[in-house]
Amino acid sequence: MAGRVIVVGSVNVDLVVRAPRLPSPGETVTGGAYERHHGGKGGNQAVAAARLGRPTLFVAAIGDDDFGATAHAALVAEGVDVFGVEELPRQATGIAVILVGENGENLIAVASGANAHLTPDFVRGRLERLGPLRGDVVLLCNEIPQETVREALRVARAAGATTVFNPAPAAGITRETIGLADIITPNRGELSTLLGTSRPGSIVKGAAGLLAHRNSPGVRQAVIVTLGRQGAMLVRLDESNHPSAEEIPAPAVAAIDTTGAGDAFNGALAVALAAGRTIEEACRWAVTAGALATTRVGAREGMPTADALLATLGLPEDAMAWHAAAPAEDAPKGVEHKDTSAVEALVDRMLGSLPDAD
Ligand code: ADP
Image (cartoon, rainbow, N blue to C red):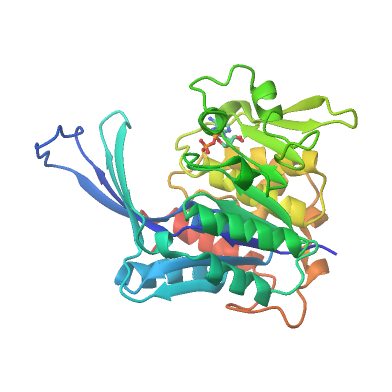
């Protein structure tokens, strides 16, 4: 029986000014254009999974401000079950202030706000409400406190879930934390940071060094390194403890905006694993979802639908026939679980024609 995707992560509102050029310290550059986008890796990953039509539950913290209310509404509109999204009194919703200059170069400052107050206790309580998690996939990013990431991974694993940790951003992550994950999904830069080097040398060797072997703690199943247009490298240990690596190429696409590609990758990976696919197949879905996300502007706006993913993978329509796996009667509900593919396609088209996801 196919499982659920449970995302524990961050919510941000991205405030973007596209300026004629980036200002230097103390300087004001006028003539910019303003955009607001829904973001945060957690929110983006939840939307990526929900767009593929699987029951997707989200645990996160927002502030009691206007941004929190619109962020919440945007998640609900995408079909994400927000049963675990908590509005924290006297906190601001996380924001990212992004300046984009003429060549796409950017300056980004983040105020984590409520994300920094997502506590281990709160996350444990929400995950426990979901009952046994056998067959489910719990997906974490690192835009929430380390102790919360660890507790979520620990509780999820004890309840029988497969745990996927997207170590982004990678600063401050300990071996203990990655040792609680079944799968981690760093990009090249994040792999270097995890290894504590400026250049990882061989990706396969570096990734293999993060896997658990001979009583030394580490990632249990696989390290999947995302490699931009080259797709991903799936690294595991074989029965004799030798690293085995498999290249998973991404389809060639006309990429126009790579923001959110990693989030699309992780959302699709979690969906495929929750649907009981093998890890290789899940990687193929993930690289394809990541590639499709780069063909549209915006992070959330660019997340592919199940139809688009099926078509690109060349799979028959029933390959994602999720109605065969309705959630348990007593599953917590923020929004109704039902076949929302027609609505999703419509929302997708509407969002595609708007400059903002609001
Ligand atoms: P991040 O966005 O986290 O830095 P990557 O750049 O590795 O991660 O991208 C994640 C995934 O998105 C890749 O594994 C790949 O599948 C897809 N992707 C990213 N950029 C491209 C591209 N230019 N062409 C095709 N696929 C891409």
